[in-house]
Image (cartoon, rainbow, N blue to C red; front, side, top):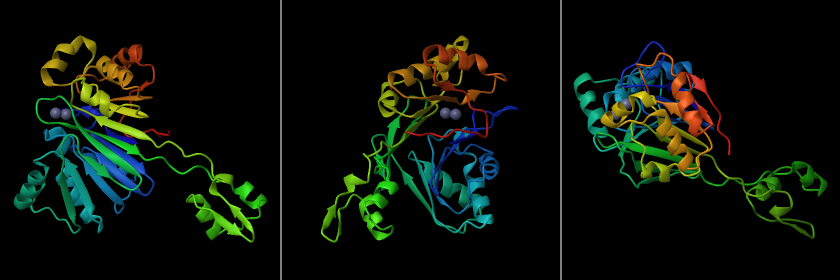
Length: 298
Ligand SMILES: [Zn+2]
Ligand SMILES: [Zn+2]
């Protein structure tokens, strides 16, 4: 995951507006698309013609003003593959109405899906669960939850058993039995136990709340709103955001393995006090800088 923009509301010298890039094999997912995301996206070398889905949390400007520019530039740079945009009701109107006025150039099909809390996006290898945060306007949080992956294939053992490399290995890897002469060889002989998939939760612009705790349950990485330090907790309540300590509380309650603090208010040039406050509750907390990449494993 590459944190393209870790600021919130307005950018400052150090932090761009919200966007997190997830690279999963040949595919890319983008959580939010604040103004300036396209430049960060290019710098991250995410590729312009991959399978791509942009997931929008809500329709506050700091999370969506980068969308028209992103679509325009992707097309300019030669994207031909369709692109999917997922977001709350209103996101389709946003894209089409900007396009009616500005006529941004887009040579590839754009498919827009408006989703609601409780919806699930189903892919062969993972699901994305949608839940509601607690903010001034409807705000969605997303959890990408990989399905269990097949166990590791023990090539050395397969060779020892005299199974020739090729289609038979493939059969075994997919869990089927193969027959060589009079021998029936089951997959369990050479394939290890199923491996747990990775879970990543993205929840910004929200007060700490039970729906997010449930959504994030058992996440390998929870990316959570952490707009303010404790000293500004009144502001967090007033504007529908969380303090770093509240983000840590959600991480602990949801039994997440790691917490990343994002949507840092522009008033903090140095956000290390936020990191300190979160770590007091939840030691496995990180404070990513813009363009920082972390890998997430099960
Ligand atoms: Zn925001
Ligand atoms: Zn907001």
